[in-house]
Structures are given as structure tokens and as C-alpha cells.
Length: 296
Image (cartoon, rainbow, N blue to C red):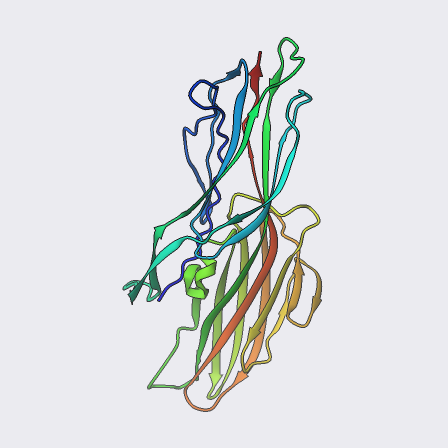
């Protein structure tokens, strides 16, 4: 079975009803590995009362709780900042019993997304000066956790019955279904060299990439831990601001980070297969803006 974690947050500014001006979505921007934001403004001018709302769509099989901050970034009077907790119900998914023939990964399909509407009522500006404009900014902050797992295979020098590739890349759902559509995705490159029967040097290079279209605040850190069962794995990262064993507080640089791990492994027989666990936890922020809208 495959459990795809596809988190989709769609922030849409809807302004108006039948007779009121409205902000109508016109195009969709698909960013990174699974987070989408779409909105556009229409009309370009507001001439009276208007309605303001937000639409959230969650394609994640898990529920998401976050905090919404919605504000007018101008000095116009008539709209107060809105801050509230938002819970997004989990989406419904269908699971396949057959794996992907190319990758061997299980297959999951989205059956029905969860849609949540937030209506903030009718807004009317006061004391409008000539040439005035408004602009709305929405920020959705939530915590995201990925518990990733795969199996690392190392074969012994001289083995003729079974073998594992010396170089192998684990990415997407191959290291966990939560990884495929997470805001920050991980990939692991394995390099295993055995020159003596029953012994090998194992190297794991872990790359973290922010592909979600959002950001971590300047002072926010990504918490991560790595464990290879049955092996003394030694890890280090130039992006770490603190560490304890193989647990790190990571600071992304240019939306990326690297962790390098090594282990001298010994095993009986021709093959070693151990579970690799990778844990990621971080706060994440999505932002959307309407751009400037004239007000008369």
C-alpha cells in the first residue's frame, strides 16, 4: 500500500456576491512537490462594499491545524486584522494493492479533497482619499512532521549469490509516503563499498530541499534525527546550529541543507539489510497577496 502525503493549501481571495465586487481566481500556480496556491484579483477597482473570504483545500490524508493571519497592509480604515486557528479535515484517498511497476513503490490516488471555506463578511472602507488602494496579505502557519523510513542494503565482497548496488538513491515515496508531497523533501544517496568479506564502508548523503513554495521564518530551525538500526552511524552537517548524537537543529541555506553520515558495518553472510529512520519536524509558512487594488 502507498500513503501519499499530499498537502495542498489553496488560498483564494473571494470578494463579493452577485452585486458586490469580487476577487476571482483566474490561474493556478503549482509550486514544488505538492503545495498549491491560487488567486487573482478582479476587479481592479473597488467602488463600494465587498466580501472577503478564504478557501482552503487539503489533499493530505492527515488533518492539518494551522493559524491564519489575514490583513490589509495599507492604512485604509474599515478592515481589522483577522487571526484564527484553522483545521483542515483530511482528504479521502484510495489505496492500490499493486506497486508501481517501475519503482516498486505502492500507489495511492486522491479520492476526494477536503475543502474548507472561511467567510469574513462584508467590508466597507471609510474616509477614502483620491488615489487610494488596498492590498490583502494572507499567512498560513502550520507545523509539519515527516517520519521517513527505508531499508539500506549492503552486500559483502565476493558474494556470488546475492548483491546490492553500491550506489543507490532513495527519494520521493521510496523513503516514506509523507516525503513525496511534503513542503521540505528529503533524498538519501547511499554509497556502500566492501573490499573484505563481511565488512563494508557505508556512506549516506542526505539532501533536504524546500520545494513547497513557502518558507521557514529567519529564526526557525528544522529538527531532524537519523538512525540506522544495528549500525553505529556517525552524522554531521555544516547546516547544523546544534547537535546531540545524530539529532540536529538545521538552518536552511538557500532553501537547502545537507547531512553526511558514515558507518563501518560488519555482518555475517553475504548481505546486510537494516532499517533507516529519518525524522523531520519544522514550522512552515505559506503566504499569498492580492497585489494592489484601487479603491474609490
